[in-house]
Amino acid sequence: MQVVAHRGASHDIAEHTLGAYLEAIRIGADGLECDVRLTADGHLVCVHDRDLRRTASNSGVVSTMELAELDAFDFGSWKNPWHDLDDEAPDLDPALNKVLTLRKLLETVASAGRRVELAIETKHPTRFGGLVERRLVELLDEFGWAGADSPVRVMSFSFTALQRVENLAAGLDKVMLIDKAHHWPMLRRMIGKKWIVGPGIGELTDHPGLARRLRDSDRRIHVWTVNTDAQLALCESLGVETIISDRPAYMLERVRR
Image 1: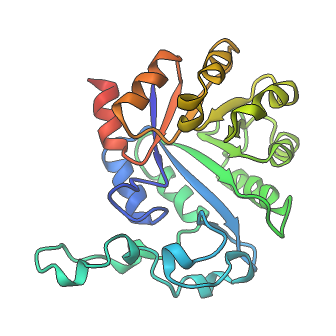
Image 2: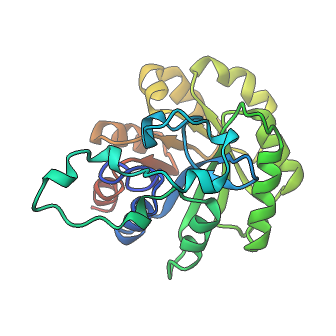
């Protein structure tokens, strides 16, 4: 079973920061997961929320701001607001808490010294529509990662977004994310035969029928966000291929024991 670090090693280090991804690579995560949004000047950045209130204490909306504006904010201090009062805490490198561009993350993966896979979720709805997927595929093509041998797969809750990826880069793996069990009967008739399904662990836990249907569908299954032994045991019973976890070090130890 593959263990993918959800927004990096986000249980311990602020999500989507370079520090969180470097830690995930260091501890041996099989892959990294990130969310991407497009800035006003056309850069893909790793940010989950549409605005910065939670992660950068600012009301700005990512899609209306340029990269230089975002680069002025601290995206890491919210995780440990008492750091400056702890005399024993290690010094923090401000560069590791800046907004992370997808380009920088791809460069980091490329220089990891081993194969590290990358699960990229495109966030919708957005004012830029299909431009997000177009810019993503263009950037992957620069790295030679837009084909069938790519370490990258693209995920989305938007069927339309994944259709765009199918048209732009048919060789890339696509993951249809599922956050509602009752969506599956419709989605299973629509999605590509080789598409991966990505249910949330909450839906699998609360709806055993969904778990059974997915298990019997002969599809590859990637589950988010798996953080406990009980959740891992459920995934193992279903033959899940990949788990996405906030606690990659903990899950790696459990999977490899």
